[in-house]
Image (cartoon, rainbow, N blue to C red; front, side):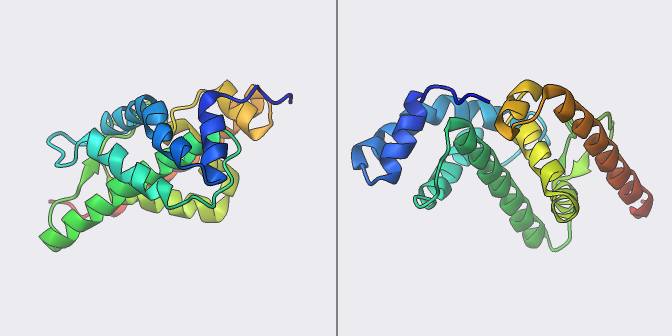
Length: 195
């Protein structure tokens, strides 16, 4: 596939990698809107009354990304993919901390987005993380697909372009991945203790 022209964000990423401190200062304002959009999509799937705010998640994720200065950013999509993963880690770390504080108390629940399947019950955010860890150990490509689709909010054609495959191939992989996730959560629902 032909590479697209370098965007201003990609240029800033490359300049930042090369040690340009001005580019580092200009990067956050350049990416903040897209990071807030990603965070907003993550929070639409979270339980109500969340103690974290999307802005706090964006800020924490960006600080984590600044620690990856040695990372070789291919382009802005690559950066946003990592940003979405960093935001996911912030939410998971927060859920684990809340669980530890409650010493096994109430689940921290999240809604499974329509893009991942058709579940109606909330799912423990830590169970979602467990599913992703298991999926990663089974198939790195399908794991990356979930990250790109759910956490980065990319469309099928964007994922295909990023992965170097056709949109049709991405759609086939997505169907298999959704079926695996559905099976994973249905098996966990059977294992849940009844109240």
